[in-house]
Amino acid sequence: MLPECQLFGTLGCHLCELAEAELIPMVEHGLLVELVDIADDDHHFAAYSLRIPVLRRVDNGAELSWPFNGDQVVAFLR
Image 1 (spheres, rainbow, N blue to C red):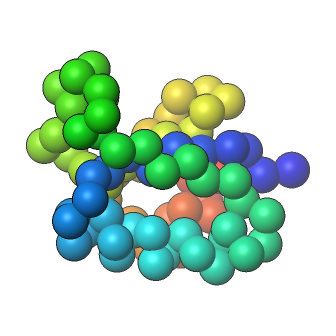
Image 2 (image 1 turned 45 degrees about the vertical axis):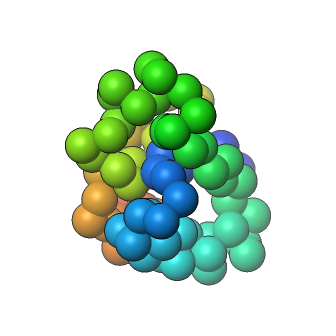
C-alpha cells in the first residue's frame, strides 16, 4: 500500500507544476497526494516558502525536496 503524501507548493510556481507532472503517473496508479498551498497557512509558508515544491509523507513526516524524478519518488515511498 502506498503512503499518503502532501505536495507543498503554491499557485503560479513553475517548479511546483513540474513536480505535479512527475507525480501524475503515480497518482494514476493509486498514490494519494494532497496539494497544499503554502499561501493559505502562515506556518506552512514559514516552513516551505524557500523550499517548494516539497513532497511529504503523511505517515512518517519524511520530506523529499525538489528536484526529484519518478525513480527518486519511488525510492522515497518505500
